Structures are given as structure tokens and as C-alpha cells.
Length: 400
Image (cartoon, rainbow, N blue to C red):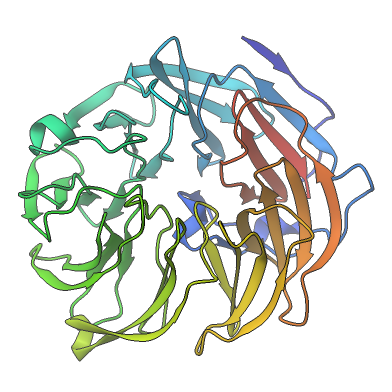
């Protein structure tokens, strides 16, 4: 294992005043970060590297951040490890939590969730692990496959657990326990929803709180589903099938509407919650907008992202699905956003700063991520003026 630090971290700018204090999957699961005062262009070689750490092992899980500590997982010799860093890149702690996925596209997948003094993660083999945030002791552990009578999916479970109050929401899939609420402190089952019997679909659930019936929404292998957070009752189900039963992008929610996107020939569907959240109706559908693992972001009245078979970057009208542009000047990839800009990380290793405007795909700055190994799949993270990019073995902190 090797750690290399470049540049002093120095003073953080005013962006920290609006920084989200707890960064989980895609920030708050929307991919839109709340920071302002960020750079509107980069130097020709890209933003300066504050530091980087080499030695995470295999994986494409993203970083999570809580109380100015960075949490990320990686696999070495078949074992999963949780790494903890401070904001200067110093390794504070490292903990083995069990076996990890080593069958294809090896390594860690789902991003950890930090909540109320505990850390939660799900391995590619379905282990749900709760650790003490202060010392990384394992508090409790369950397995989605053996404890809930289901089977793994082709490329390994890939889910970031969702915490709502005292409930930890996970998605085993299968006939009996499609979506489950566990007590976050003990791991005991609070409720279990049989759903439609689908397997898991690499998707992380979201919480929709502003309906008459607050609910968990996620995509399973063949359906988009809404489940009553209080009781576990299935409220609604919408059939959504693609070639490989892969739906890894969390739905994007705003004002009664859910944008649900996947690749492999499927595309996007916009659903509207009706009857207080007890049912849904289709608003629009687009086969072009087929983001595979790069997700979408909503900024103003528009949604932005890239395709899969349709190898374009898209902007569409949120309400109607009308395409405002499609552009193939960059390879496809991951989309996050902050301060009126898109941060696009392509599957070929390009990192681009793009103005979020429906007028055109306006690339302001671009560089290459040359550090790290294997797939460029991890979703970047923004925190206190720093862009964190995980590329396989390496976590890189860019000054933005």
C-alpha cells in the first residue's frame, strides 16, 4: 500500500459554508450538490490535485463523507476493507468487514451510508454490515441472500442502504422479501414487502416524504415500486423491463414526479405520483435517454445525463421529455452537478466541467484522470471545494 500526497490542502474557501455535512450516495441521492463559489473553469491540465491515495484495492464504490471524514471501500485478495481518511488525505483507520465480490468486474460496489454514529454498507455478496463510526467495530451483520431467501444477481449486489428514522432500507429481492426495513441499531426486521417477486436490480432506494403516504421508491429487476415507509405495504408497481434486468440509477424525484432511467435498450420513463402517493401514471417516455450507470440530474426545468447504446449527452425538458440537445463530443459517463455546472466523468477517463444550460452541451474545461486502475465508473463527490474521484485503486482529491 502506498500513499502519495501532493500540495498542501491550505485554507478552504467560502464554499464550505453551504457544504452538505453528510455526503451519502450521490450526495443526497440526487447528484446535485449544494455548494457555491466553485471554479467556473479549470487550467488546461485540469484542477490542481490536493492529494491522492493509492492502495484502495479493487472496486468502483464512491466516497461518503461525515463530520469531515471520508469513507470508501475497496477489495484486496478477496476481502473487503473500509478506509477512513481526514480531509488532508491522512489514513485514519482501516477495517476488514468480510469477503467481497471477485467474480467479474471485481471489487466493492455500493457506497456506504453514515448515520447517527454508525456506518452501513452492503457488499457485492449481500452482507449488510453495521459498524461503529468511532472505532469501526462491527455492531451487527446480516446477509441479504441467506437471511431473506433470495439469490445474488449477475454482477453482484450494488446498493447503498437508505436510512429513514430508525429504519435501514435494503432490497434483497425475491419472492418473500423484495424490500426490507431493518432496525438500524440492531438489524432486526421491522417490516418486509414481498413486492412483485423481482430480484434486486443494482439500484439504491430513495425516500419520498411529501406525499400523504411517505414512501420508499426503487427499481427492482422488472418493476419500479413504491412502498409505505411506515408499514412496508406495496403502494404501487410499474412494469419496467430491459434486456438484462439492470436498473442501477436511483429515481430522480421532484414535485410528485419520478424520472426513472436505465440502459440496455430501455430508456427513461417519467411517472407522476397520484392519489397521495398510492398510485402512479406515466407522463412521458424516451428510448433515447438510456443512461446505464451514469444517472441523471435535475437542474431547474431540465434533466441532464448521458446515454448507453445512444452514446450522447442529453438535456431534456423535465415536464415533457422534449430533447433540448444531444451531443457526442465526449464518451458517455457519470453526471453530477453543483453551482450551475455539470461534472461529467466519462467511462474513458475524461473529467469535464460543463455549463448546465439547455442551449447546448457547453464544455468549459476538460482533463484526463490518469491515476488509478480499471473502470471509470465511480460517481464523483463534491465536499468543501474539493472534487473526490475514485478510480479503482486510487482516490483523488481535486481543488475546485
